[in-house]
Amino acid sequence: MDEKQLADIVRKVLEDMTGGAAKSAPAAAKPSTASAGIPKTARVAMLVEKEKYEIKEYPLPAVGDDDILVKVEGCGICGTDAHEFKRDPFNLIPVVLGHEGTGEIVKMGKNVKKDSAGKDLHIGDKVVSCMIFKDNPDITMFDLNKQNVGGADVYGLLPDDDIHFNGWFADYILIRGGSTVFNVSDLDLYSRILIEPCAVLIHAVERAKTTGILRFNSRVVVQGCGPIGLICIAVLRTMGVENITAVDGEQKRLDFAKEMGANKSVNFKDHKGIENLAKAVEESFGGHPADFAFQCTGSPVAHSNIYKFIRNGGGLCELGFFINGGDATINPHFDICAKEITTVGSWVYTLRDYATTFDFLKRANGIGLPMSKLITHTYPLEEINEGHRTNLKMEGLKIAIINK
Ligand SMILES: NC(=O)c1ccc[n+]([C@@H]2O[C@H](COP(=O)([O-])OP(=O)(O)OC[C@H]3O[C@@H](n4cnc5c(N)ncnc54)[C@H](O)[C@@H]3O)[C@@H](O)[C@H]2O)c1
Ligand SMILES: [Zn+2]
Image 1: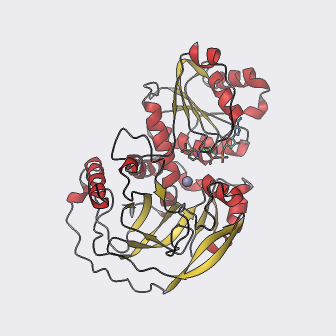
Image 2: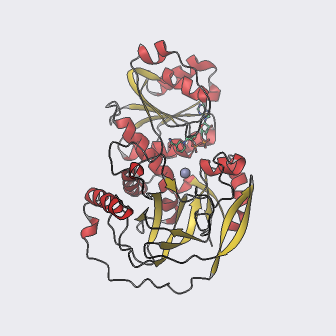
Image 3: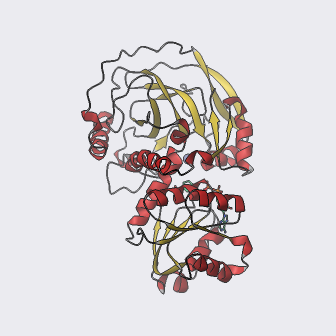
C-alpha cells in the first residue's frame, strides 16, 4: 500500500465519522502560489544542547505538490518537551521541538485539497497536525484493532534535517505529504493549542468506557490535578458524569479542579496514611468508595494508593505513566483479585480520538468550563528557554509559546 492509498483510507474512515464533510462543495481550485508576505527566511527554536534553545534562521523550504506551509501561531509545551529539554532521553538533539502547535496555511502544493477528515483546505485555514504515516500501515489507526498511535512519527519529535522546519516551536512548519492534518478553523487559538493534550483524555475515557463500569451516575476519582487530570475532569463533565472527586496535594490545583467540574476535592496532605486518605475519598462520596478511578500522576505511590479508593467490582484507568516512572508496589490479593477490579491502561490516542476532541472542546466551552484558563503562561519564541524553565518550576499549568 502506498502513501496515497493509506491517506485515502484514513480520509474515508474519518469522513464517515464526521458525517461526510467531504461532500460539501469542492473548493475552487487554488493555485499553489504563495500568499503575499511569506519571507525568504524564518526562525526556528533549535534545542542545541540540554536546557538550551538557540533561535536559528533558515531559508524557508520549497513547498512540494503534497506539502503545506503553515505560519505558526502558537504551541503548548508538553511534559515530553520538558523531558527532552532536561535530559534528551530520546537522543534527538539538535531538534526543533513542539507538537502541540497550530497555525495558518500560507501555501499549499497543488495536490492538497482536503484535510484528513475530508474537510476542504484553503490558504488562511487554521490547522493542527497529528502523526506522520510515511509508508507504515501499522501506525495509521484506521485499523480499529490498534489501540494508539505508539510508534508513529510526529512533527516536533523529528531529528533535524535539511528542511529544519520540523517542529511547531518556530515561525513556520512544513507539513509534508503523508501526514495527518486537520482543518480546525472553527476553534479559537487556545482551544487549538489544547487539542493534543485533550486527545489524551478523550482516549483515556474511551478506554475507561470499554470496562462497562463508567456510567452517568458513577462516583469517579481523578487522582492528580495537573493539566492531564484537569482535562480528565472536563471530559467527564462534558459526557454527563457529575459525581467527581479530585485528589492532589496542591490546593490551588484542587480549587481549579472544582472550576473544571469536580464537586469534591481531597488534599492528600491533610490526611496521614493511606487508610485515612481512602476514608476521606469515601466521605467525599457520602460514605461510598469510588466506582471508577483515573490515575493521572506519574508517581508510583499514587498508583499504589488508588486501588484503596475503588469499590469491589470497580474500574481503574491508569494513564499517568507516559514515561517510565519506576515500579509501584501493590498487593494483588487485596488490590485486584479479591476486589475484582477491572484495569485499563491508556497511552496517547488514535486518529479518531483526535477528531472527537474537536467536538469535545466546543462542548466544554459551550457548558462554560474554563478551558482557556489551563494556559497560565505565554512566551514569545525568543523567550522559549524562560518558558521551559517556568514549566519545570511547575508554577503554572500549561505554558505556551505564542508567536507575535
Ligand atoms: N497516557 C498518556 O498518553 C499521557 C500523555 C501525557 C501525559 N501523561 C502522564 O500524565 C501524568 C500527568 O501529567 P500532567 O501534565 O498533568 O503532570 P503534572 O506533573 O502537572 O501533574 C501531576 C499532578 O499529580 C499530583 N500528585 C503527585 N503525587 C501525587 C499523589 N501521590 N497523590 C495525588 N496527587 C499527586 C501533583 O501535585 C500534580 O498536580 C504525567 O506523569 C505524564 O507522564 C500521560
Ligand atoms: Zn504533548
